[in-house]
Length: 504
Image 1 (cartoon, one colour):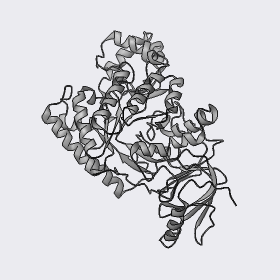
Image 2 (cartoon, rainbow, N blue to C red):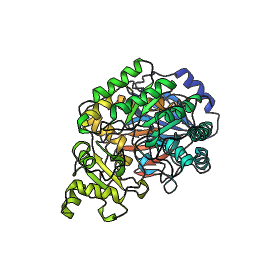
Image 3 (cartoon, rainbow, N blue to C red):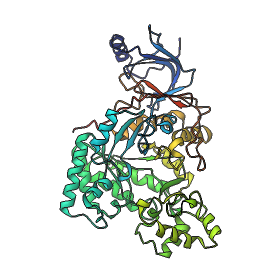
Image 4 (cartoon, rainbow, N blue to C red):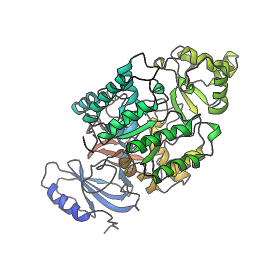
């Protein structure tokens, strides 16, 4: 007999198992697993039975005739990881196997981030329903996309009441389609020009349908504290859950003040605001070059000097794409300054003015965070892990975020227990997104699962080799179908669209 810890509804498991044995499909039994159920509870040895995309039984189980048997070999079986801030949807048409995602154990991605989504969202949902991919997809409705659809090129101003009404109508359409809520990217065009009242009005529209709010806040550096306050205010005035996207203290002046950040959130929660955050386990970020100039005053030398003194350094600011001169990709500001025999500030100003339009695609990696702050944010009870990554992306987080958290921060640095980290990738992630039937191993839940070796799991992606696959992720199942095994995508595409579960 295996040692079983039954902190779940075994009676319900028995009834579901009996009913499912008469249903279609031969089913699967994963046996000899060390089960981390996604709640943060202690792991236990046991078997998991899957049929028709659902978990139907957990315990000391015997195989049934015709049932596929998978020997977990004593490795950890966890719910599939839910990436609450993902850009992996880009490129799914070319790679429906979503290799960089499933190889991390990601089974569900939440898209529409940083204020960007397809408008209307129903079009994307219809496309992935007609031609599923390997992973499940949920999405927010993006404020920047809605604002752009209404205001066009004339966006560098506050919106009129009529324009806001048109935005509300587009958002309402997305909410009816099943959007999780509203996302904003208030450091990016065109959202950077929006007033707080505009954002609050749209948040209220999403809240009226039981939606949530997630935000790349107005500033992650200079105006960090007032930007956090704005998000909290939206939560307080709408009553909706609010989440800080990829939380960070991205200015050297704020390093060591993670406690202040968390204190703001704790006080808000004590006042009844359901505020949470997600975080990826890297001290450098990836975005457009222009985001460093919130006033878009690219010819202002004191601003450029401030950037290289307080936000990053010439050796820590790297171009990953620069369409006006592609050969500069991969070089740091320090590299270019040395090559051109110019000072770094002048180089930085020249680069941003040559590629000032975000559409030109000048993209950067910038080291701006302190790992000690990252660890404090990770440990906050309401913080879940995310990737903020993409398929074939320029930042290694697209292929390595979740294994990096398990390897570096759990096993190597002992920041938190393994079961706690898994909870922050599964059960807590699901709760923070309002998803009830995933992120947990229990009878009745969807069979999104990952099998991994905690002794060997690690990220291998680097800045130079940003799509190198992780080690230690052995198998990934989505809705009961194997999508990753032996270092390869299997070709199965069982992913589903996940729509908001609250009132429509």
